[in-house]
Image (cartoon, rainbow, N blue to C red; front, side, top):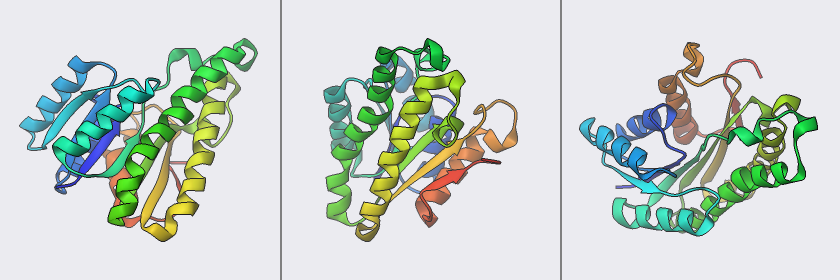
Length: 219
């Protein structure tokens, strides 16, 4: 049995993705910085018939993130799908004129260094097996800079560039890298942005592949 590792898993999108991939036979490693939350989520998923386990890791603690992914691979099965979708800190959502150098550095650590740490951990196994998918989930500022959320805009742009370069470099190795841009509130009432609808999009990106970037609704 292969595994989807969901970094930044919560009761909304993370849970919906775990259920969608679980229906296709994947185990789910749900990873976030609060152990009680991921343990509760894993228990709920198990009640729905998904083989799941929770792992505690903060994306800015690189070694802890590596350890969580190693444990998931060992305990649940090879990681075939990696989803990187942690929710940005409020400190990254300040107007550009209120954003300090330190704010930008923290945002880059969160979005770029965190995603790169996760990718570099799972990628050798994917290339060795000759299959895998890396899914990046970002807000609208990944595609269109937004001066009201400067830290995230800069960091998402860096994450996007890294992901697109990986997409091109790994195409011949049967490892797909895709980005889902969600320019709206997940679960905010618009059916396009409902967790189950987004989970279906992510399943399609994994199963059918295609271009690097998929945008929900109007870009």
